[in-house]
Length: 202
Ligand SMILES: [Zn+2]
Image 1 (spheres, rainbow, N blue to C red):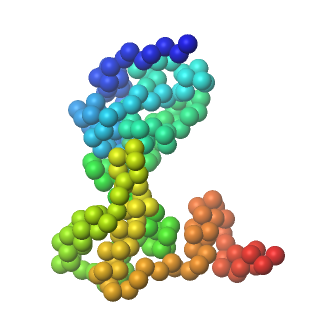
Image 2: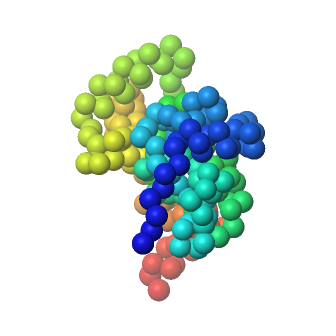
């Protein structure tokens, strides 16, 4: 049977604070027993194996990091331990409590082909108005049971709704194939609109 993990959260922090530089990480070591090492939010933390148990990873602090349950689900499950730290540094953000709204911006970009609140003619003086509208629109959104936070798609739709209120124009896809283009581009394919149209008819 699998042994229960008895190591405390602080044991894991103490082990790593002496070995890993906190620069480029989502947390300062001082907060690392209460904030997720990937998204930086205050959360109930889970012990996440660097090398999974099923691939021979141990239960020692040297093989554990602390993540919230959402980041734990997204963490790499591979035998090479270097990738956990590469992933933590590559996918975190530099400020606390911003990770999920930044992910909402990425989702917005996938939907509309640009970042939210850019190139719609807003200026600095409207920043407070935008904030006020965001808070108001959050009341028209909800959270999946068990998720604890709004997911990126929900945040992206709130951004789109607030833009609509500000500009008076409904949210619009860049072009009907934008989503597929974006996906192909991120996989390294150089693709044109006509390629997609041809592909559809063949
Ligand atoms: Zn997290």
